[in-house]
Structure formats: structure tokens, C-alpha cells
Image (tube, rainbow, N blue to C red; front, side):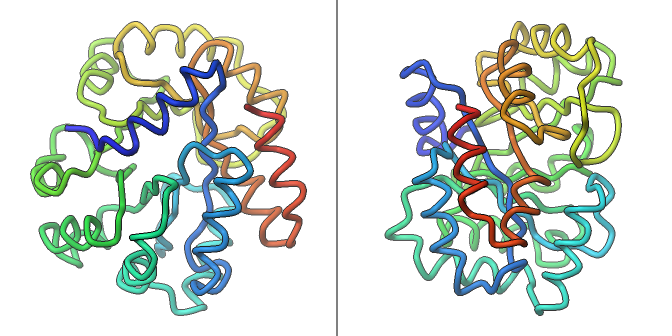
Length: 257
């Protein structure tokens, strides 16, 4: 089951021959009372949706930039509860789809049923849980489906083809194609094999395929997006926002579309 609002937002970009750009930001890196303004700004800059990170003490998929943002957010007192409460406070007026990126531990502690219901009340459209394997995803997917929230799966280059196909067939909203072997963070270049991997994933699913991890410039975004439907840009945007360089964020998104 996919969230209709998320599906429509992605389809609208693709139908207009644009690439899908999904920026990542860390919730609570800036005070949560600025979150509504941040999401509006990213949408106005051209984001199809926004991936919103939940800070966690042991973020196994994250590189140094996002780890640092998570630590700043935790020091600010950010929790899954405060993020969902903040999102709920302007859920009725928000038009940009929001995708939560969280690890399983905070969700499990929160309670999976309550998490899914509170996400729905907060207007969350999709959820990414990078440390949740296919074999265990029933822990959360049933509750998400009952609340019309997409469960977005990640595909890794190191997985065999039969597993990639299963992941691609099950994903909702879009397929998150991890385009490096390693954690998040800026890279000077991507492996030459990446384009073939992205093209292969396109054959496995009718959902948009977005490349993420290591996308830090508009030229990298265009290079990867030649072989898929768009990109997720995280560490560079997190850095720009931390340094209050909003014009650079806007420029990066608009030049990547």
C-alpha cells in the first residue's frame, strides 16, 4: 500500500519531465519551531518531498555530517515524540509530503501501533527504517499499512539480484537506491558500476527509483539521475542549513532538478 499524496507528488515531477529531488534534514538540528518554515522553504525550492531524520544515538547508516547533526538535535532535547507533536501542529496546512527516516529502536520503544497512528495524525506520508531487514519488517509494516503510510525500502549494491528484486517489488512510494558501499556523506565521485545497478533496479519496479548516499553536487545528481528518476541529497543540505546558507540549498535543489 502506498500513500497517495506521496505517489502523486513524485508522479507530478516525473510527468513534467523533471527529476525527483528529496532533500534530507535532521529534525531538531534547528529548533523545532522552525520546522514548518524549513519544510515550506524546501518545497518552494523544488523538493518533491522531504526526508526528515529522527536523531538516534547509534545511527549505523549515517556518516559524520548527519551523525553530528543528530548529536546537536539530541542535545536540543529532540525526541520522536516532540517531532511528531510538531508535525501534527501544522499537518492540516502542510502540502509537501514528509518521510520519516528513523532506526527501529526508537519506533520499537515508542510502540509500533502507536507510532503508526501518531505518524498518520501528524500527516507523515512515508517511513524509512534502514536497519529493518525484509525478513523482520512485519514488525512495523502492518501498522503502517493500516494507517496509509508508505514503507520505503532501501536497496544496496552488495545485495544479490534475487534479493534486490524482492526489495524492489515490495517498496512503496519509491525505491531508495543506496549508491555507495558505506555510510551517508559527500563523495567526490560514484563508482562506474552505479549506473548499471540503477538501471537494473528500474527493471524490477514500476515505482520511482531514487539514488541516495554520497550525492553532494548538482553534477552528481544529474549524472546519477540519468539512470533513474531522481536523487536524495542529505549531508550537503544538512551542512548548508547548519551554516544558515539557505541560498546554497535553494541553488543545489534547483540545479539538480
